[in-house]
Image 1 (cartoon, rainbow over the protein chains, first blue to last red):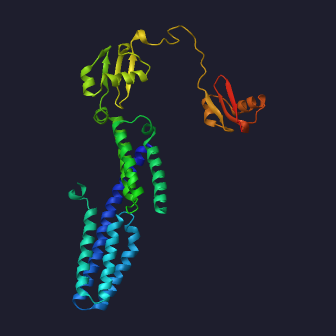
Image 2 (cartoon, rainbow over the protein chains, first blue to last red):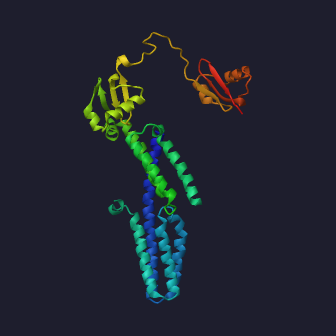
Image 3 (cartoon, chains in turn purple, orange):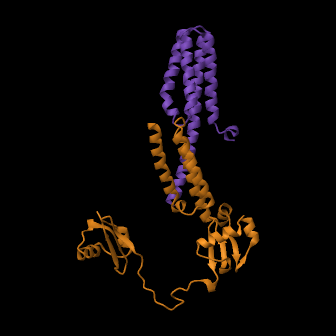
Length: 126
Length: 223
């Protein structure tokens, strides 16, 4: 009977963990996507200083949450996203708006992919 | 490298706990579902152990799910015979009343050589000695010999066999085993008394066995 309770507890724990992970990741990615979009709007309005500050905030937030995310997400895509954020920063500092636009779009796509791969969709399951 | 080391230790502990949780059946004869779980666990554990780019949880979560499912399935199998039959299948009678069922052998894809090999391992020299042979759900073959080929037991021969109970190791490597002493109904005092009579210190004992009739055997340490 003790084993059955442990098994049920384990199953409930795993299901709760998986649901919490999807919700947490979804919220986190939405936050980063909106931050990137804010940075993009600063750049399009020629507010480079603000864009650099916003981008630094993105990098800082990403680094703060990286350790936690890497406990349940494959490390490779996380590294790619971090690289994109760094390139975005360098592009802004060198006033290369086109490069920034390309890299920010790339980062948005990578974030979206990261989110979609964790969703329990039929395509992902099969 | 240090990450691989720590991960291996963690997974090793986790798998031992998982197998322990699944119970003793898991380490003896495997039913279909148990075999599947055992194979899967070993494979799943190996992936995050070798690839440090994958989170450890990607190995731990599937193992937890497999262990939980295995325990829950075994509980349901205990409650429902139909479910048990669905998961484990039915035993198959290969030899019924001394008659070999060739159709069942074909179904099991078992040749007569395979059957003879199994029988030889059970000290049976000929198929004609067997009244019943049953392939159990775990794949093992159980046999019942024809009455004239069965070994007589003491009741058949009208002999009173001595009841010595179980012989257990009461002292191992100089240490008393409370469990074994209790199992054969002895006391620590009796063991110390025997050792004193034999002029042996308990620390010098490699193995001491005893049974409920107080028959004992002492093997001293060589070094």
